[in-house]
Length: 350
Image (cartoon, rainbow, N blue to C red):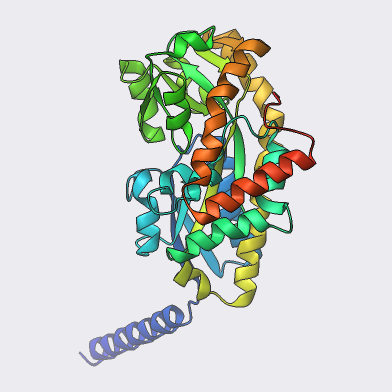
């Protein structure tokens, strides 16, 4: 009996000690944990080479003091509701494209990318991030900050083309088609005589398969990364614009970080953007070749006279965009100034 009592007392002591250690351990856990939702599928290069790269760099350089968990699109909210979720701190980080945020931030329309303006991904990054010591980026970030978010310096562009259920050989064939696009794309689609449709990226495969849409304006490489080549057999280019993936953070959550973690977040975001541009530039030709050779996709490169029709349809969008807000007007002014300095007028084809 005496031995049993001693055993029980010993077990009780061990339990109390374990509980105390656990409580002490939990109390000293200073890791900051953020939740992020991506607006693009996990198979997308933007997800893998931009968003995930950012998260990995933050974890590595903060030595685990800041951990960011990415949730796939639609896990917490619809892609078009991500901005509101970040505003309200339902999640701390949003990852998508500016076109998802235009209801709250008019300047996000420009941030996503316009058409017939920049012929290379490098020009896009140079203008939006570095031109005049970041003047354009600061204008867009100011608009985000007014709405309780901070846009990171991480706009990773992708080249846009028409991906269609059936091959298209001319701009005329676009007329009357139902075409999905975001940001400025619906205006271009309308100007081309087609019907704009709004859908989240996760819905595109089924929409093309069922004929809900006839075509989409998407990065050219998504023909393979999200398996559109199973349901879409046409790709018409060359690229006539870029769409930029973005990363933005709840402003309160960002401001609560120590200065060194803020610096890590900023540097990781910029490095992830540059990593993305370099990586996809080396992979695009290969995936397009696979699309043609193994999946029966017909890739059409428009002749100059046909390509000019897309640029003509895109031209009015600059003035329309400038009228969206005072900041938008200033960004378009800077865009025209940049193009003039580069000796371009927005009609170069890649």
